[in-house]
Image (cartoon, one colour):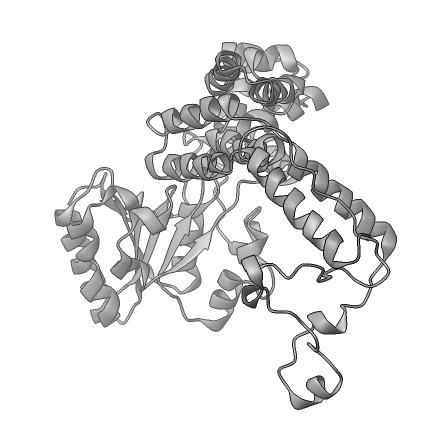
Length: 439
């Protein structure tokens, strides 16, 4: 049997030679840091542990968020044999061996949990091999993946497992973990500035934090304190040129956003690549591109939003480095698209208006009337169905609450599609004025 692809994991006996991340791996549920959406009172995994009934699941989340740990602790919570398969190293042979171990466990009256790390690496046939055994209850299936299960896990297997989403660890969680590591290593204190930079460098990844910290402690030697200089010596050029938690990160994304807004595709591509080169999460950049499509382009080119979303979804499917090209495509398109902040301004204006104006009742003619009582109270009375009017427009009809003078929140720009939108709105508003007696 291959001990690299198929093994029993989590014996709780990590030696002093093991990496710090392994030595600090939680041995009990109450030692787990983070993931309150799964482990908090009344949350899915906490409820499963309390009920004594394990269920097949897919643990989806970034590296270093505790997927393997939760799988192992699930087995311990249910006193189940834990069989782990690496989809990177294993194949059908390892799946058969896991089935044999599960059969032995059943004969001994024990449950068995089969854990597949990087399950998205298995092809369709390999994933299908689990189905009959999951359905028969021979073992509980737990898969871990960093990729979107909707794309990477077969629908048949996905339908038999609950997807639990793990989140990157927050700064407070990483700080607690760092303190556990310091206590275990007996390391010198770490300065506040160095701690903040180290946590920013970890970017929500507990394993990355602990492995980096262990290296930093080794380089610090007998120093009385770990400071930023020690951190830079350990992490090298990458930390110096790009700080995810500091001003340079926000300056870079600001430069990218302003280059797109300024319709300079060359500068936009430059800052995009600079951020990738410095270690920025492409998913973060993708989210900002979606924001730019609405804030700076809007209805001047509605295709921009769809293209930004498509780029984000394609990156989720391909990952790095292949998916980064689709983000670059979105960057260039947004930069050369016609610009308009009319929608952004209208939204902010309406928000401010509603905040200070308070709640006004919905006019009776706009209310739905599904019951006789509501109809008797004149709900929906005199409402004009626009599709029955000329041009599918009920000229003069009012849709705002009583007492609000017809405002003009949205003013299209004279660029892109908004040119035509502006012309259409001008016609409709003129028709409203005529129908209302020239008001």
